[in-house]
Image 1 (tube, one colour):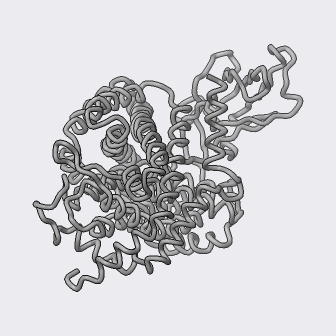
Image 2 (image 1 turned 135 degrees about the horizontal axis):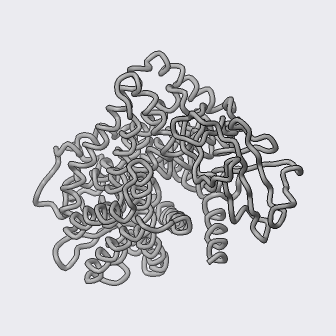
Image 3 (image 1 turned 180 degrees about the vertical axis):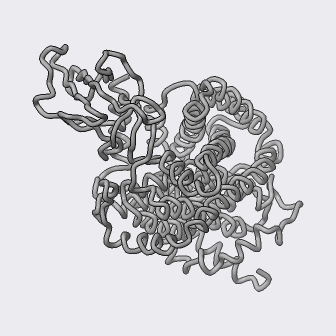
Length: 556
């Protein structure tokens, strides 16, 4: 298992993190975005209003081939993209890249709109009809039909990656996130959360794309509006900080400054890289997932669904991610310490110590860091690479920690196999409390908590509720992506069995630790994007011709 972990970690680095200065996969996606934007004449700007016209039902025809209307196709795809990336991904980008990272997320969204338009238009052009009259489409279909039988291997490779990614990243990881949040915030056992969410997912996905479309067309607007309204309230309360926040975003994009607590590297390449990466992860442009959902739309004009799809990165990144980012920056939450419980054994907690900290009386000469009045005396304890504030033994922050933390190294010298905390009277503790720099969803929750404090306590629970809704909706949509991939690989009869397995994996994901599964899902997601981008470059001429022909019609 350790060898498998190392292989997966190596693959993740090769696909998403190589080279460190600016990852090649990110560069490829961004390059295609720029290329297709220029080739289609900035279609995301010129035809934005046409997309709004289509999605409002102006061109809907119940007699057109397909399973769901334009709006339902949009919400199905959005329910997969609007999710943890909008909450945790933005916070992560700002933590590592500083406020300027949000600017590069905006740039990515603009190019992502053109990418989404292209892949969805191609998916509509090359979709197929199933024995029951429903339709199926996506990259595997436009690769095989558009590029010919010699490229079927690429279509199969994409479908395999998509089926596995849907099973893991789009499903098990989402369930695990919800279960972890519910356990942390409300002490609900993970198996109970897993049973409830798996039942909800099953009730929707076993009904197929029509039921998925009906549910997402109600759930996505509700959860999106609720989240944005919460953010808007905070921005109104802190109205005097909004303009400075926007100024910081733009100025730090080109001249990044490290935060007072070491948040943000202060290097433009990190600001650019993290902004682009998290933008692409958030709106999924180029990854080939959204075309599968949009293929089900009722239309006889591929371009009409393409212009609907270009609205996705706008809604996902330019609206929802921007709201998250402005709340985090305007409240100052991104570069301050927040009171929090701390698990001393967590991977995000690290320790440094002097030679004097190595206690010969301990087994293997394990380092021992001593604390007096809540502060280390012979070393340092960091949380997300920033020093922690005074440590306490109780949640009321009344009793400073006086004691020691013993670190037992791994036999290979890589990390620790044991971290134990003792008070001076040898009472063992599992948690400490103190001020820490946050990251991911906890940072967003802390920002909402701080921002809504003048009106209502517990504002961070809005983020908890959003995580719950976003994760469930993501699983619902990814089930459709996965079963279309399974159908392509194994035939129409495999869909029902894939859905059953999908629900089972959702429960499994809620009750187990998923570090390796998350990484493996990231590998499959990267492969999906790589295989898809090859096809998009090759078929860009087809997308150009379809677009030109459609907009030459004076009735459009």
